[in-house]
Image (cartoon, rainbow, N blue to C red; front, side, top):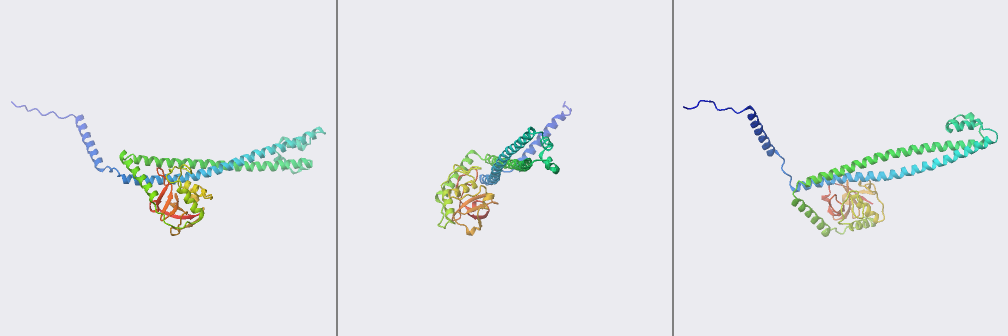
Length: 341
């Protein structure tokens, strides 16, 4: 006889587990369907190049802070040295006044006014105009010298403290820009790591080949240089082709963009400032149509600089991972203006 028992119902726990598993499977398949596709090699390269340019902008700001820090440090050292010498002079003046008081005491007692002087601040003492009448001419002269020296020292100490405060702020800015630079480089490395080892190797090889070809086969034309010093700077920079870009590098083994231009013009006997943000003011601004070999050329909101070499070519230190090379202007970002030194 057939059995009429009901089939056993699945437990509540089993139903819950099955439901959760099904939901997870649906969620995973949905995420897979909507996940961003892996960026192509060309997309990664474009993003990495952009990050490198942003890192270079941070480098230039760090260079400016470093230059300002060095300048402030020299000013602080000079002021502190001045304060130390002034304190020695003040001690000498006080010693001379003490000798006068000692001599007066030995000759018949210490004048009340001198007693007051030695027991209080000379500035407070000199405010009491009536006391001046009780001093000898020599004592009054010594007190006035002491008062002037004390006021000068107070002003110098105040100025030195102000410079020290400025120095602390500049050091903070320098540290922040270094961190920003390192962050951009870390982002670039992370992006590059989305490629396979073979893809990264091919990208590096292609870039090296392109750089070598650009330097070996570049056509500079026969444009006349802007000046003898511009021609000399361009020739000096050309001897550095192939040397690596390094943040903060100013030669002779490595360079960043403004480090190369500063070094090149120094070889031509011309001292220009250290960063892109200050080199823009080291000469006369000119438009693109007026460019001649030896002119500085600025790109991307003046965060990058190179030397115009003729025929639309620029000699520059590109950015991290690259070497000093010639490159066509259209690949360097938005042109700002030229500067003729």
